[in-house]
Length: 330
Image 1 (spheres, rainbow, N blue to C red):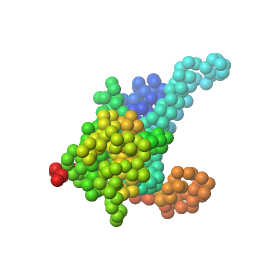
Image 2: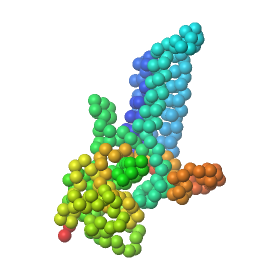
Image 3: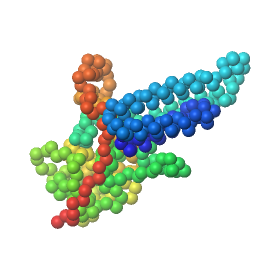
Image 4: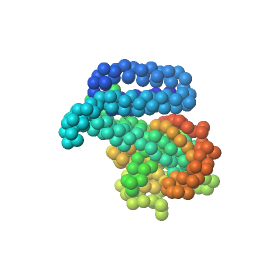
């Protein structure tokens, strides 16, 4: 099992334990964590996608069955009935309120589902890949640093973030520049801080040259957004873009088919939502079908689920990869 995936599973399981009644946690919590760690080590030795899937399903099934069983077992129905509907025991209300809060916290804060609708990351993430996004990957754990190590955004990380021009839209790109980095492109090659980058994760599919796209930064063109024009006005020096404090410069791996920081500027660090954890399902369908789940799409899904599902991408782990610096540019 990938160490990043293993750490995320451990974080998730640590939070899931809080859905159990407090007496049950105090008595069995330590043993349950140890059993979970042992299962993780076993999966690490096998390192197959099937074993990871079996591990995840088995853990989910165990948690669902035991959490609800212990919750119902802790309820004294006679006491509730005799007390009347308006006088339910405070402990009962508090415990179930905590359970609901934990469910909502887990599904909205820790892990989020996301689908790739465009080909900007083609080569690593394909149109139709359905991702689980780790939303606590870059969150500062504060006093829990000994349990949840903190890792800030790094060069080469694949990140999910709010699109700066419309924060209702979510994008996924690769981090190329951090605050203080000086960047420009020369014949499609990224030069960062005076050194050319060797980027094995990129794809170059266009057969024509575009000076703006391939020799960035030049004068803004028709596709440059207001934020992109602001970048040109205030952050271009000596033919290079300088990333300001608190911002990131991101690009798609499919360089000739990516609307990225070259066109709409920097990403505020606080807009980063997390990083892709794994591809839980990949479906070969048009982009419009992935955006709008209408009746026609559900009918198509029912008919072609097994033939259009990309089974070889199930549980694929998107890998962040830092580029190699090949030496000073001429």
